[in-house]
Amino acid sequence: MFDMQLPWWEFIVRGVVVYCVLLLMVRLSGKRTVGQFTPFDLLVIMLLSEAVSNSLSGGDDSLIGGLLIAATLIVLNLGIAFATSRNRKIADIVDGTAVLLGRDGRIFDDVVKRSRVGEADVEEALREANCRLEDMQYAFLEADGNISILKKESK
Image (cartoon, rainbow, N blue to C red; front, side, top):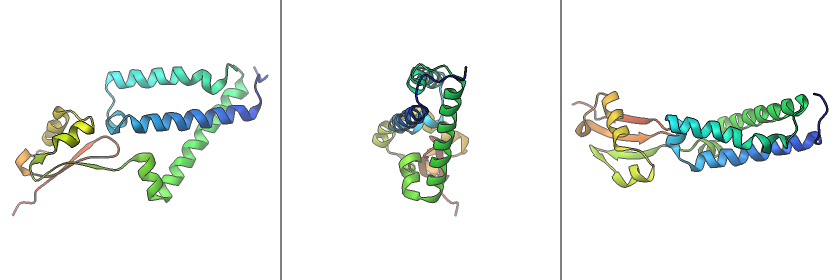
């Protein structure tokens, strides 16, 4: 239970590498993957965790090895949170930035498709904002995957 099969530092290196690679893969998969989970997305996340479990532990089943990996992942997460809260450029790289999906009652179809957002998602966001398309001033795909609708000001 307490006997590790690998050196302690290897658990830390494995944790750092897997964390960074998964962070990159999730960022490259797009904003909608992060923001709104469908049952399919949840399944992919669960399978990802299973797929990388051996990469993290290297086949070691010791209690200390598992706790070392958990501590490494938590410290990495805290480090990323600290860095993104202090530096806008790092935040933009890790979290992403908002994307303009439409303006003045017009949805930019090419941007919507490139962002992998469904037409139904934009329509749902309009309904949630109680806004008709012609009353929309701006539609943004936020970094967290949600769609924000800003109405034109009434005169």
